[in-house]
Length: 152
Ligand code: DQA
Image 1: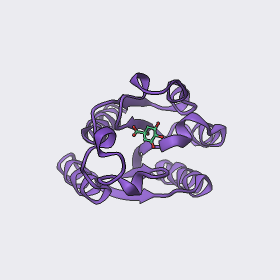
Image 2: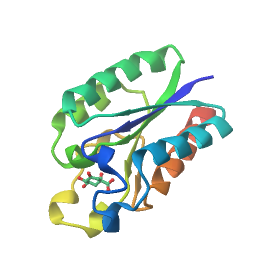
Image 3: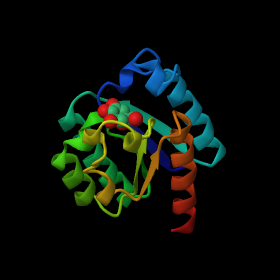
Image 4: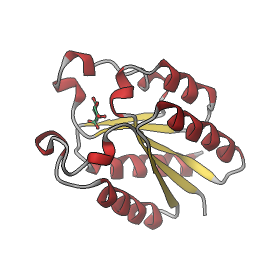
């Protein structure tokens, strides 16, 4: 059974207590459990990794690129947190492991927030983008990724 990698960037370990008015009350552990259920229903296993460090996220993307080639991994659902708006290195990493499909997720509608959140370095390299559906966006991204994997 191929895996889907759920990748979360900086500060997302604080989900549930971090600005609940913006990000909701669901914890990262809850999100991961919900995603695991959805992935399994669709015929995938789920692996979850969160890091506050850019390099650790890049290393996981490189590894995911290798595992995509062997058919072990179907793709990545990735919330890069604030690195979305700053990281050319993450853009290069995703570009460098193509055709690995990476779906970018944002819990909040970044376009309705501060101007510095309107630009994403990740979107031009992403296979799809899910924005503003709360933590339910992770489920939507898994369903979209699964549909892409089936179509491929
Ligand atoms: C976020 C949006 C980013 O602007 C912010 O820095 C985050 C979370 C979201 O999921 O809405 O950390 O990616």
